[in-house]
Length: 418
Image 1 (cartoon, rainbow, N blue to C red):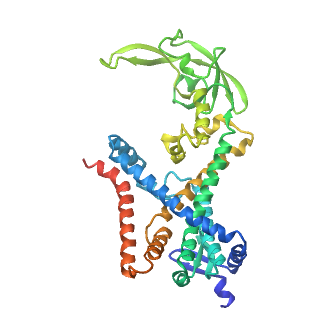
Image 2: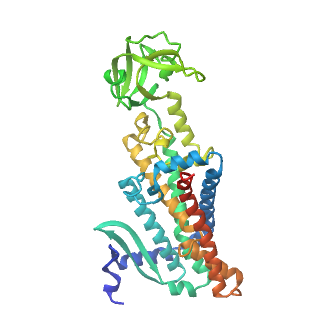
Image 3: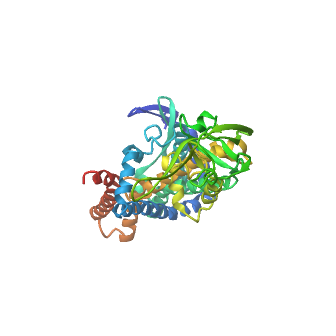
């Protein structure tokens, strides 16, 4: 081929494709590396692990929706909206645009690159490689492995090429998660006290100068880690009384005078009548113990793996994820100011790699997992089933998985009809 076949711009479906021979040369060099073939075998075994994760998550969600809690969960899912099912930053309201696109581009580059490297390690041709642009903004990469060569290759060869993308995404995602957990483990509260997560507009706290992100360390000269220990139904403090708060704010210690307002109310749960009233401050707080437990829980991956599915931008997760916008301001780390943005980026690289891995690994044709499933059916039957029956089995698996996925997505909206 002429050089223009290797390096050229092409416009397809609103996306600009930039082909270059350099990527192919890089894949050739990496494919010749002695670890490339063993890595290809290892990634082949990672594929079913990725598929298992996918099935587990979808089945778990299906069982939750069918449980007694299903109606409440469905109601919450409806508040999130259907766009949350899309992994596109800027369209999905909970995927940050900058970190989301960086993470998505990384995931696509290593996914496509793995296909090409494993293909070259096995001597299979790569027709093209390059970058994808939308309005001159890079949005990913592509590797065009010769499909005819894959179909004619040994099943073990074609399976390794197909498995490489999802496999390397899962490995990369878990590596980022491990690094994320290690960094979060270095987080400590910036001061010992009660974190102010929010301040009600016009409240005594707001009028006294208290702000979200402050840590109240002393209440009228008394060390505290929980405001509820001094403002509760048994308090001796009175409405209209002025108290002095010692506050840690961005490395500085402040002393604020706050006049307590009226009123927090305790009601009888049976009659609904007021039992007692006590002074009102007007803050949403996270106790010192809560700040410590958020870090210890997140830095203990074996205690609850579900916590890593909790997206830090979701309101319900803001008080549980130490590097979320609501909590990050309360912590310090040996990494300094880079800790919060780094942990956020690592989370999204993990999240998008993990989701790309488990979705591509599912036996949905023509995704990688579906094609690998088809190769597996052919290999196990040793060609005795015939091409038509092999396709029927592959399509049956595809329809079954799609039914499960669509059911989980649609079910919360069906609840609202009953």
